[in-house]
Image (cartoon, rainbow, N blue to C red; front, top):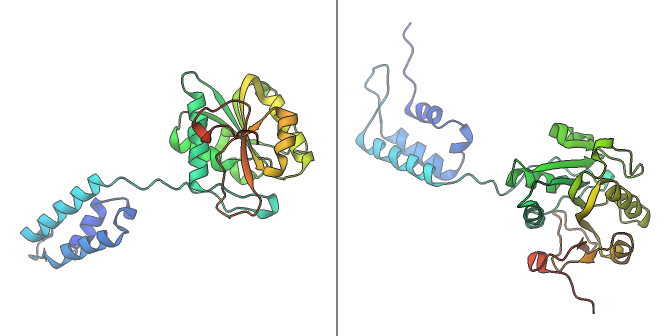
Length: 252
């Protein structure tokens, strides 16, 4: 039995695999134009009118000039029971760019303590960067060998090969208690090489404790979260970032 020829829309959709390419309104309009000018001569293969052929050429030209939108990074849903609040895009990109700047010039291993948003943006920006995510939420086991289970209540219960193995360490303690920061500081000490770069994202209320425990100074740049938290968050470093991150905040 002879099968009917596929429609021109079907052919173009198959040609433009993957399907997500034709999801926007402008794509649909182009498909409609093709359908309007499709000529079925009764044969096995569809043909195009001159108008439809010109429309197809224009459509493909637009596609080749339009980069895919990779501005957002998909993450699992926040679990508030684990005190999870993801950074907004500006914060994630700013901190990721700072980490990559610190890694430039020499191979450096990066540890992300309880900040999976940063891990995802780092890998998006530079898939070759060596990053280890230390995280309690086992949903992030999807990252394979880049994931290490971490419970801040056992701050040094980590693989021995990770001891003093990291040149850049970014930490975002899950809770704003002094106890949590103290234990995360123990983890940072366990992981860090001598003269390691440290970045801490936590509440303004931890400013004095961060200086006492880790010798950190607040930067002018203010981290933000997608969930619009009420607590004032800060970014602290143990090195002077110069003009990056807005620089260190001057003592009043």
